[in-house]
Amino acid sequence: MKELLWDKTLSVDVLEIDQDHRRLLELFNRLGHATEEGEPQAYIEALMDELISCTAWHFQHEERLMEKYDYPGLDEHRAEHQELISSGKALQQQLQRSGAPLSAQEIEFLEHWLSAHIYGADMALGSHLAEVM
Image 1 (cartoon, rainbow, N blue to C red):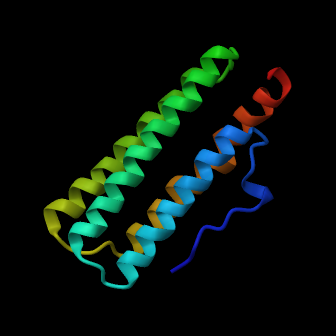
Image 2 (image 1 turned 180 degrees about the horizontal axis):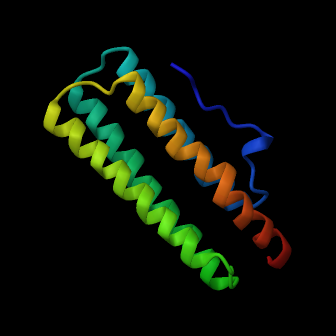
């Protein structure tokens, strides 16, 4: 399993957002390892739930900062958040219905789900916040 490791390339240069991202990477890695090691399905589902819940909380955190600091890309960023949560919840429901462990393809989807958002939309947000905070 490929781990997502924190390094400077993932930093958006806003400490509180970076701390959230580190937590999300940690949960993703736990989920991947649990799947790879054949942990009980209930445990994997609990980790998936925690990843989705923490991601939703983190997105609310970012949106509060965007509102406070008049981020010009708020609507687009919020729409991306909604799409990401919807796709994550769809995967979560599929996992619960099937009772099967996450596949390598689904783990790869989650990796992209996290990293693409950080490298894309969150970097732009971080640049804005660094200027105004």
